[in-house]
Length: 167
Image (cartoon, rainbow, N blue to C red; front, top):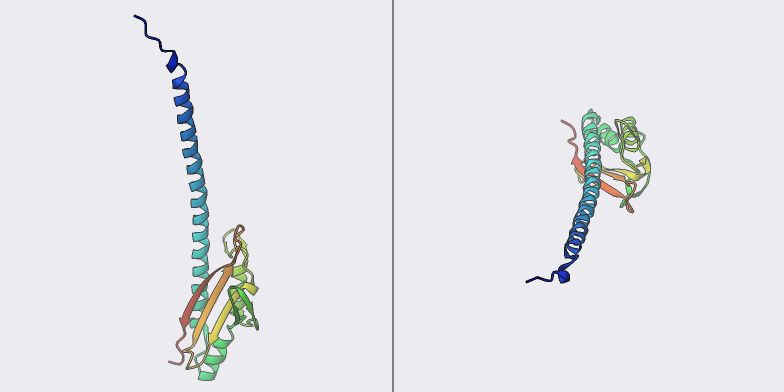
């Protein structure tokens, strides 16, 4: 007795094509996930750099304010203020004249090999707000803004610190 196998002819070929299609979709998914992971890693690195730069300036302010008298303290603290008006990375007002703050602004906006600058950052997109009064508790707020190559909006990191006055 002979068994007719003609209805099953080519079935293995269809199974192989379906398996190849499923495998290809899986590989494409892995490539997409790899791309997202790379973008997330780059973003995390820039955020870490922004936090480090903000902490650097906060430390610089704490170490370098003039504490010889209350007036000197307030004036030297206010000297760090940079574009104190505005929100969401749209700032205005007087720019700082403090040499340490200017050097910091230059570091934030200068990118390159082994330079800490942030992408799309300029001195105009940075803000240092100072409240050098007893009611303001000598509050310093540092906002760093940058824009990556694929970002549609500015990203920002804000640090708030309070500076001790006369000892």
